[in-house]
Image (cartoon, rainbow, N blue to C red):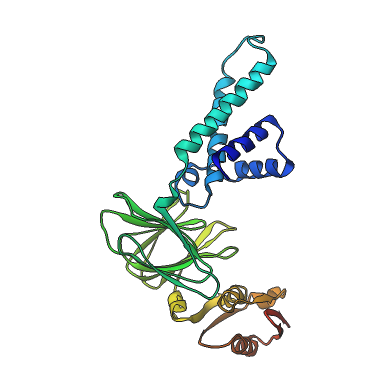
Length: 319
């Protein structure tokens, strides 16, 4: 969408001429995203259009609150001129915000991987990132002098170049991970726990947008954030670390079958159906390297005593 197209859409919305779809789009953005950091950090979760709409909403709210404190004469100007002036003012605000707060995408890079592929990325500070399949990372072409901040969706293993003058920060859904120089895995897929697992050094984990006490992790410790309960738990990893996927190893270490099936789906690009809650709550601990999906299913069938059907890329598991 061009700038003029955006302003035309905003104009229709403010006048009440927008379609139902356009209204729902604006209203949803306004309701869901209110925090400045989400708006003004280029490359974060929101797109350019969304960020501008939210900024406008916040500015308008502030302007409306200020206007209500002024007692103007009832007949200071005709109603029609009031409407025209208001629309002109708001479109002017929109134009200003669009110009001022539009991010500079050429300064940020987003790199993604599809199912079945991984990527190795070297950042401007020489930090090495190994991006797992079905993942996406956004980072600046060159870090500034204050900190080193990236945004991750999916899973990646970080080998952070030590720099005592600049923190390295990974933002994911619900968590913020902060280090100086260390190696660790961050996993944050949709509809799953957000996890941080430390391979070496020390890592600080905090809830995003929260002042709660941070958690400090050392080697073989893992923090898990539940997006539903908003709680963080810390566990000791006894078996292989999660970055086994870098060697194409499928690691299922002391996790419930429900989470194991998610990882199997990602690893083999299949869809697995299972509605047996008791079965899904069972905990397993195993790992596989260079095996077929059939081998994995037969092994889990032996361990958990279930039945399954496998047709093309669809698998059903039941008792």
